[in-house]
Amino acid sequence: MPSPARSAVPLALSLSALLALTGCASLFGPGLEELLLPRNAFSGYTVHSVDADEVRQGPSSPSFTEIEPRECADTLAEARPDLLPEGVEAVAAQQATPNRRGTPETVYHYTLATGDLSGTPTPESVKRLLTDCFTFTGRIEDEPVTGAFQSLPSDALPEGGDGVLVTSTPAGGGPSVEVRMAWGRVSEVHFLLVAVTLGADSSPLSPEDLTAECLMEDPAATPHIDELMECTDRMRDQAVEDAAAERADRFDALLAKAVDRLAERA
Image (tube, rainbow, N blue to C red; front, side, top):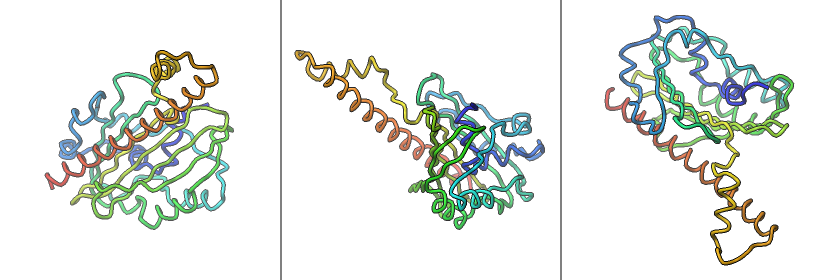
């Protein structure tokens, strides 16, 4: 089965994936690179600019098929253009990958573009997407997947900006994928911030750590195995919830920095 993290991105209508479909290296704008987020904005991550060769290669992830309900499949087909809008004048992009591997694991993609991006998602298309694809099912290379689209509001978004949260989980029990996306326009610059998390439903704490946490609740007691299992389940759920909240806060902080940086240099 292909990587769920790579597979979720096309379904999320990622502008960075659209930009990757072009083979025009001349679209890269040196001036835009100065507007990308500074490397220290991604603490604990390795950041690199996406060069023309990487963009020219395009996305390698497979597409979802057999999407249900039918309204969702139709909306996705209408909302996702196949090529980069012709009016785009310049592009700059960067990717941030974690220095330490683990689960859950989040990779960030940040893209800037100037010109006419009329082919990108409109408020109307996003509204239809959230309605028609609130929950959906589909397949990736015959692997059943369930998922959902949700609105991703943020005070950091500029006027006219928008965001969505896409989650998908293989029916066979593989790791779930979470895709956060926010986009908008500041002055003449369009931006897209994407965070792809693999294993979003996984606990950042190991089973050993969870057991240790439970034993520390009452060091003098010797809990029954059922009590210990109940405690570790509760601790795991809390750890997953805390990790999700931390990802949301970090994404919002990065979004605020991105918008402020564009506004300062407008």
